[in-house]
Amino acid sequence: MSDIGPGDEELIRVASLARQRAYAPYSKYRVGAAIRTKRNKVHSGANVENASYGLTVCAERTAAFAAVNAGDTALDAIAIVIDDERLPTPCGACRQVLAEFSPDMRVILATTGGKRKVTTLGELLPDPFLPENLRR
Ligand code: THU
Image 1 (cartoon, rainbow, N blue to C red):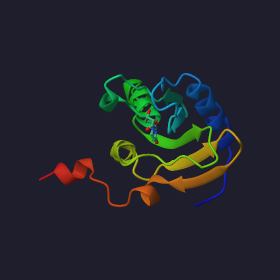
Image 2: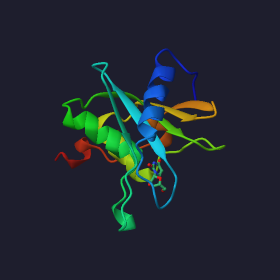
Image 3: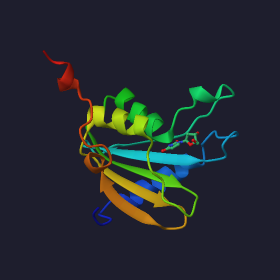
Image 4: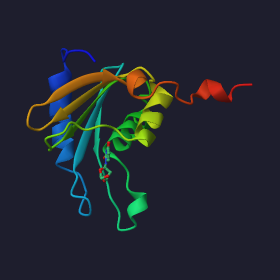
């Protein structure tokens, strides 16, 4: 855990805006995410649910795929925002997807009510399966 740093509140603001575009008619659990890349670009996303529930994609992956699709694979930080008493916590699948690109990125967890926690992906997902594991 570390402190909120310069730029973190701005990233949270972008994630909150993305959250407004969440498509979550089933769970009503609306999540926004914003990723700052090492090139200092910001890409955001929200969760997108489906009537076939298992096809739902989380906000974190939507944001990560937006970054990758913009050619930006070096990820520096992600802010994740929900409107709840509890802080968000990214699911295991999203941790693994983010680790593919930046296993030690900064992770900023936030609520619309002002709660904050800063951690790292390395703390959330120690020993991820990485591209080098496929090298022989
Ligand atoms: N969800 C996210 O977008 N991110 C998370 O970290 C956890 C879960 C979404 C998926 C689904 O639309 C809803 O939240 C409830 O699981």
